[in-house]
Length: 169
Image (tube, rainbow, N blue to C red; front, side, top):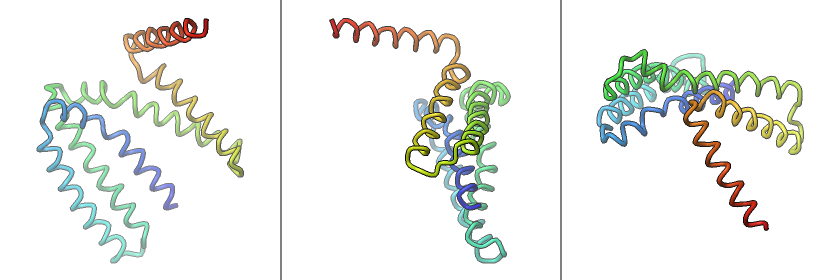
């Protein structure tokens, strides 16, 4: 159970980082740092309470982190939209819907792969990782990238292939 909670937390951390590059480029990190610091204090307080004063035990640390993530996420989205001068719903649509969709589909496929091919050896673990990574790459190209971004990627890959074929002659 603890490992599953940790996986959920890692997923939330990975999907929550979209605002950082934007705000770093705009040199507007002050409020983001304040939000993170406040949430860190809340996380510690929740973790101590849930671990020490409830029957949850050591997994209270993860529950505290998970609860804090659900509080922090709307704050980060609101601030990112405000700094970019966009309505919150447009910001969510442009910056979050595709990554979340990819994450949900990929998680479903990874669970299905794991149920079909139990990673009992290093080879089967490698195959599970290879299948999941291949699906992720396909989802990234087909869902994560817009039409113009796919065209740029195709042009880049054609350039690599053409240089490789010239070098092998």
